[in-house]
Image (cartoon, rainbow, N blue to C red; front, side, top):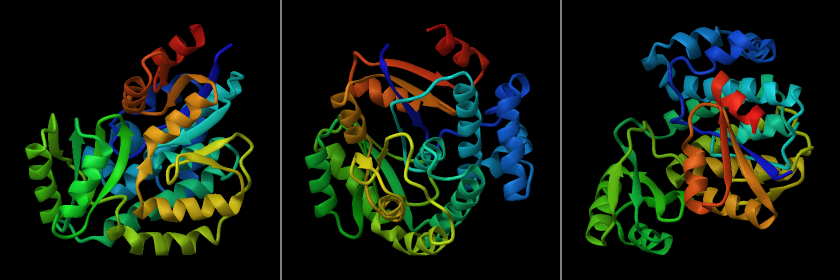
Length: 306
């Protein structure tokens, strides 16, 4: 039996209709949507299943919606006896991983990520910050571009070999895109996001989040969990709290997280929640990895038949 990791997607994975089929066919998924709706005070099913897209795209709605959908899929897998050796999530997805690991309750998680989304959006006025994906340059070259740009520009996500996302002030990001193109990047494109996540412009959001984290119960993880901020395991509640605060305004080391799992013998990666972006990243990191995703009835059955 191959050693398995569960991965949970981050912001950008959302789409209208996500989780609908799972909730219709599996009571354990429907139960998660009900619990999340009760905790957050609005109809999570309506938001995820019907939208409208404009509402779903608002950061403070997107984050609890993706988390709820991911946990609905996870609840089915757990009831069917699937237990991963390790869990991790990309940015927002780290909160789903924490719920899966038993570190955080679903109810507290949806409220935390709603607040997190609001704080992240408020930290930088619209139009003053951007993010861009740089494809085909080494991380060292991208770091140099960030250092040479005028203004705040930092690596936000190390996603896979040759794919780094940068974030910062609008002019600095646009300058970084031009520099990357002149350095021979295969692609350098500004992303359609509403804030420059995972750079120091988000420090105020981390400070507000820290206050909220003091009010929730975080337990030591029951399933090994790898954190974004360093791509390594966190073992204690205090480490988790510190990692979540830092994560808002620091780089996400996703490629390093996957490499750590591979070095520990993980061969099977299951993306739990909407989309297949993380499977794409893993494929670029290790072509031998066995990949599944679970976001609807068909993808779930594919995993169960494996």
